[in-house]
Image 1: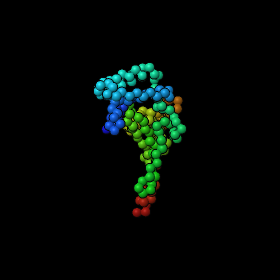
Image 2: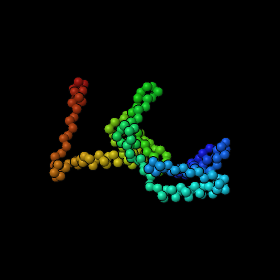
Image 3: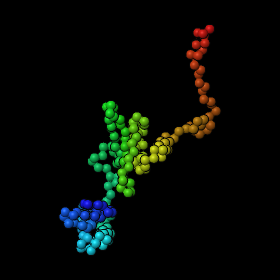
Image 4: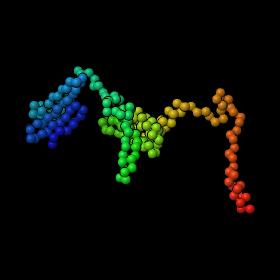
Length: 192
C-alpha cells in the first residue's frame, strides 16, 4: 500500500516488502527535526499505535515553540513585488500571446486557489490592482473583488458631485447643450 498522510504530522506506513507497519510522526521547529515511529507490533495493533502517535505529537507541539509561517513572506523567487501575485503569459494554438496577472493562495484546508485577470479584458494596471485585491481578500468572487477595487479608487480620488462647486455650494449654471450636427442640414440642402 505504501504511505498515507493521516493528519498533520502523522503518516501511515504499510510497506509489506520491508515489513514496516505503523505510524510516523514528524515535526520541525527552528531548524530541528523530530521523527518517531510507532509500530503496530510494538503497540499491539493499529488503533493503539495511532493513539500513541497522536499523544506523542500533541506532547511535542506543547513543548516546542509555535511554527514559523512563511505566509506573506517575500522570497528571492518573487518577481512581482507582491506575495501571491505573478504575471502569466500564455500562448494560444495560433501563436498569439495572452497576458494576465494571477493571484494564488492556499486555503485553510490546504488546497490551492487562484484567479486571473487578463490585460485584454482589463487594462494592465487594473488587472494588477484586481489581482492584488484578490490575493489580499483570498477570494475568487470577481464581483466582490471589483466592488472592492471601485470603492478603493473612489477613496483615493474623491469625485465632485455634478452641480456642486469646489467649495461645496450648488452651482446654478447648466450643462452646455450639445451642438446639433451640421451634416444633417447639408444633406437637406443637397436634396432640394
